[in-house]
Length: 165
Image 1 (tube, rainbow, N blue to C red):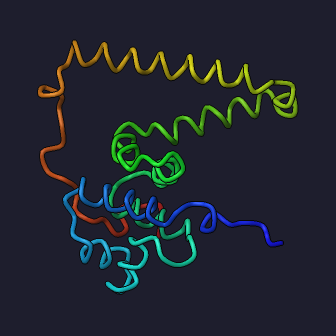
Image 2: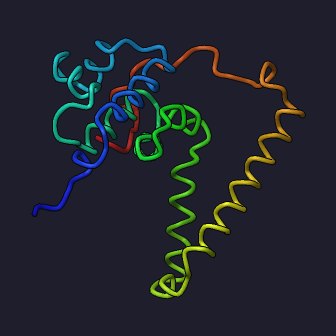
């Protein structure tokens, strides 16, 4: 029996809903994202519909074009929350989480196996409750209507990183 792939285990509608949520939050048209990736419009439509074999390279390119986070997109698909990809892109939550996880792995190494699931769940739950409390505090201090936002959504970017030829 072959090992299931990401494409086999995640319903394509989750990827589709997440990609569409990000694109729409950026006020971009599918044809503009397709052109910036660059992909043929029909190929992009299939990609955004979650059809075909999963490609992290395409998700990464989509994230570059939409100025979002490829790991936030993957996490959003895994937790079935398209809004997570949109919300977490601005503050880089997912890359920061992965950076912290990388640091922990570097410190603990093989000893990570000594931790039990109950402890891990408790610690993560505590951390997320702390973040939720911080969100609540900021809503009081900076109500959502007064939160600064980017007045113009980004246009599709093609090669904006000067270090990336």
